[in-house]
Length: 453
Ligand SMILES: Nc1ncnc2c1ncn2[C@@H]1O[C@H](COP(=O)(O)OP(=O)(O)O)[C@@H](O)[C@H]1O
Ligand SMILES: [Mg+2]
Image (tube, rainbow, N blue to C red; front, side):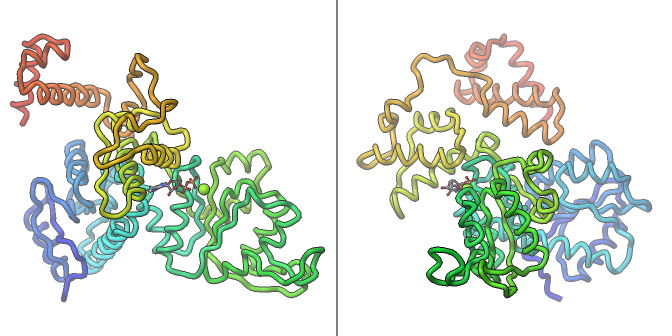
């Protein structure tokens, strides 16, 4: 049988798993058409971690395996791991935990999980997705993953929440494209006036009201067979919320001025920058409608939580402006400026900043600080604010990974030492001076490294 999984599959068996059991699992997978091979030190692609019991060392190893690969944990012990251990494996980066029961179905379950994961990753990494949703930071990748999953593998309504300018429209468009069905009809709820809202949503018959010279389709009719995107759904007035709920439940509606029920089936995608939970608690949003539209929720992270994406996004926007083939970049000072400034308007503000730089820029070569409008230049002599937002977000990422304080402090110190040593051409004395430590202290630290590696 031909393996359907496109990527090579490696197996990492922990020391406490017997060779015989490992061989048995391997044989069953081969039988199912997979082609497993032992994993290297830093595997990539897809892999299985065979384990019997979970402890700190196992979690640490899973964490390092999952740094470069998709890891499915397979518990091969006589008893399944405790629930808390399963969660810990997920937290360490495994994408699922399955128990090996020695049944014929085990290999099929593993194969199904891997295939779904493979399909998801292919879509998330496809040129179509990557060229419209730029970003490789963990927060952004997690979002793209969940969006691709809901779009391509379900019909579920989706609620996108996030601050302004974080890409909610972009995400809605992607859901439409990946879902591969019908039209995308966009309705901005901030523009719905009480007088026109009915007609916008339901359409109207000729002569239904003064000025209705012709019959007209509304959003529900236009979205039939496709996707209806209600932008800023938190602004929808309560009476319209009741009407929308009805359409979502019955899939039927009446045009204004008509007595005939019409049918429409569409996928609903909603976006809001408000907390709808708060709106529900305050009585401004119907709880029953909220549960309908929020069957699947995703949150577009603010730019400050994805600092690593600032420069790739800036480069992306610049390339869009400069046109195909034009090699235009930012010089170091401008890159630093882009990295250090705040973006309350998130990606939209970054895009506008890049556009202003581009419009002032002339000639070949990179964009330089002279291209910055005078009122946007950072105040001279202002003390650099540190620790800044980027530092905070790096620490936040470590906390999210449940890294302890000792390791965070140690890693910060080690990275600082490495960077200064690089800059000082490996000169211990100068590096120590710059870091404000004694030569001896730096030497001891370097020796500890050498011993550890
Ligand atoms: N990840 C991204 N990659 C490329 N462009 C993005 C990304 N996120 C947002 N943008 C751009 O930023 C701007 C604001 O995005 P938008 O989806 O309208 O935000 P929102 O609806 O959350 O206010 C748009 O010009 C959009 O093209
Ligand atoms: Mg928007």
